[in-house]
Length: 201
Ligand SMILES: [Zn+2]
Image 1: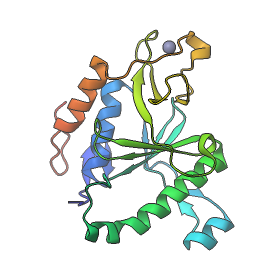
Image 2 (image 1 turned 180 degrees about the vertical axis):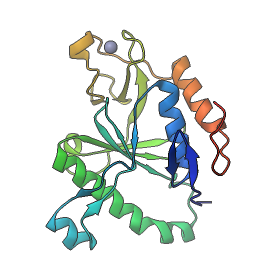
Image 3 (image 1 turned 60 degrees about the vertical axis):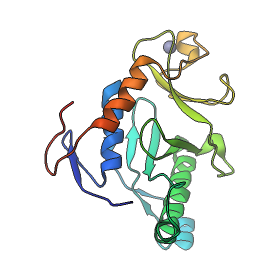
Image 4 (image 1 turned 135 degrees about the horizontal axis):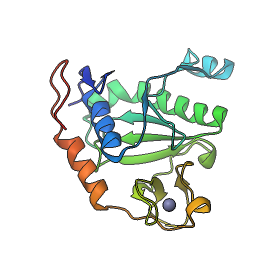
């Protein structure tokens, strides 16, 4: 079921529980985030293609310098849900890509709940706009509290997270599924949200 329920957490009013779960995940790892902070005008072409040119991404992660759009898991959508949600979803993903290209920043779509998510990469590292899908969250072996997104099909390949690069610390290979990551996945899935209340950590 896809039902958006306004959820208050950490001073933000999230449009859905799923978005709030991602905020819990980021908090658990100490990854800074801004939620629906700024709308962007993608220009005339976007207006022609989509009817309007304004796009408001769900999150911006300032330390990783990446725009984030959170989406429900698509593999488990019913035909009816797909018919209802696919068009606006594809438009917002096209806009996410457009924003990444315009700002020359990475842009990712997170499908599903933390730990079971599917991550698609848009923006300049993926300039043809076809989603690149092998990304995974990972922790630096070298630096404390440093997280990357890396290409799980090729450890030395795509890496997202500009505050922390191997050029800075010398580390080239990240660690996936560390204790901290597992704990963050668990915390985000187990968080209970009541209307207008902050979940217990
Ligand atoms: Zn490092």
